[in-house]
Amino acid sequence: MPPAGRPTRVRYWVIVFAVALAVITYIDRVSIATAAPFMQRDLGLDDVAMGWAFSAFAWAYALFEIPGGFMGDWMGPRRVLLRVVAWWSFFTAATGWAWNLVSLTVTRFLFGMGEAGCFPNLTKSFTIWLPPKERVRAQGIMWLSARWGGAFTPPIVALVMGHVGWRHAFEIFGCLGILWAIVFWWWYRDNPLDHPKLNAAERDLLREEAPLAGGHAHVPWLKLASSPQVWLLMTQYFGLSYGWYFYITWLPSYLQRGRHLPLDSAKWLAVLPLFFGGLGSLMGHYAAAWLEPKLGMRRARRAVASIGFFGAAAFLLLSTTIQSAPLAVLAIGFSSFTADLSMPCSWAGAMDVGGPYAGTVSGAMNMWGNMGGAIAATVNGYLLRWTHQDWNVTFYVSAVIYAIAIVLWQFLDSVTPLEVVGERAEETGKPRL
Image: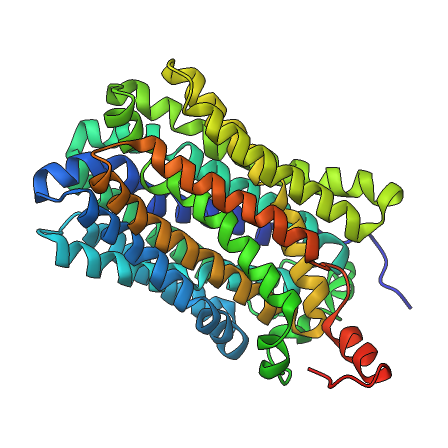
């Protein structure tokens, strides 16, 4: 007999915790961009040196994302998130203790190691605590919150720095994660059926999801590594992240040095790209869903992603021709909006192409994307040195990479699973990958 009564909504607190942590991660991650001009002055760092410090986080984040997700499967999200949040919160605070380039770069690398375990384990908690029909919506809310958390970080950082300086600001931001970890450890259970607040109806709703706490299926690494679709997915996401990383690394410096804006003005204009990007991530899902009955899923995703990358390149190039700083940043904001139209297409493609190995494929895609961000952070520093502070060149390079992503999407089948591709290969007599 099914349990009487309506299910409680205790499970939705997992989304609340995920939203809160997503905001904290982006505050900790993006705060260095606002502090960068002051750090360069106090630590004696030029643009190339600061670029290496920026990229240290991105490299560590990329390299440790798959191990971070594996730890969640092995140990459960509760223990892993407690450890990684405490770890990166300490190194967020330690950023304020840096005294030269080496100490700053090492600190940011260790910080990135911790944050790499965040989103894989939050996703793992969604699979355990939420029924399948609620997971996509939860991911959308989480990523929108993450983008907007990063968007509003510049004015928050500027406000805190104005009172305590950049060194103590990082210490304050580090405390946010520690508080989150304490409350999360007290409330969360790896098995939702162990939580005392669930009623019988909600327990019945989650009974099938609860056993998903562990276990790795055999991953066909050779098949994944030799699949053109996987490489197309990863490479187009490299292009998306290459341009996007400018907003969390060099944007405040661009506004103050390239557009000659005071900090009070720059901190508010720096909100626009990530704020618009969050809207783009949400709009991309609805645009693809609207086009799917007319074009089919494969063509709908291709159309939305291609239009998105075209708009990203066009608006970025447009910004270089605008003399007004606010209007130029508005154009950059539209570039971020259109670029992020491809976000839901990319992640949906990773799930569909990967099939039973969707976690591995999406992890590899995100790892490749963050490598693009790491390269961008360093390359932009060198471009500024070689061109004597010509910021437009950094935008030209990003626009070209966006254009390449458009071409990649014309060959990408983001719908057909790898297993089906293998079966078709066997039917035609071709060797199965």
